[in-house]
Image (cartoon, rainbow, N blue to C red):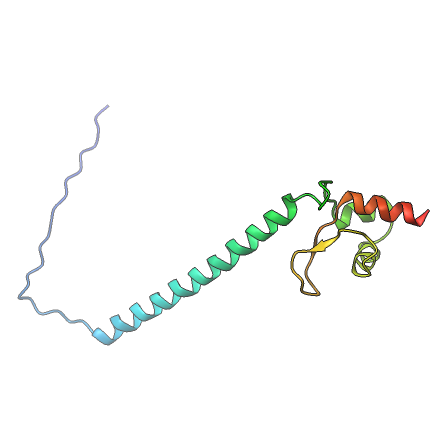
Length: 124
């Protein structure tokens, strides 16, 4: 089997040839490209920060070293709706439960199993 051969030719433009270029159009395209790079860089920083926070929150055990549980797992365990679990979390009934950030609508990410067990023992 023969290998295909490729040949390349180098074309050198004539420096004396007239060039029909609208510099204003080129400058506008460069400015637009720079704006897109700035926007994408900012978006990338935000996404990286969010991913790092989510990874830390999900991986970190509770303050006492117990594993974390999710809202869905608690709803299944207690045989209730997610809203009921979220209401109990918002009321501060489960010791050690933490939000991702202090904002009111931030999702719950750290719900230590030890806090769930303590809450359940208090309900009996």
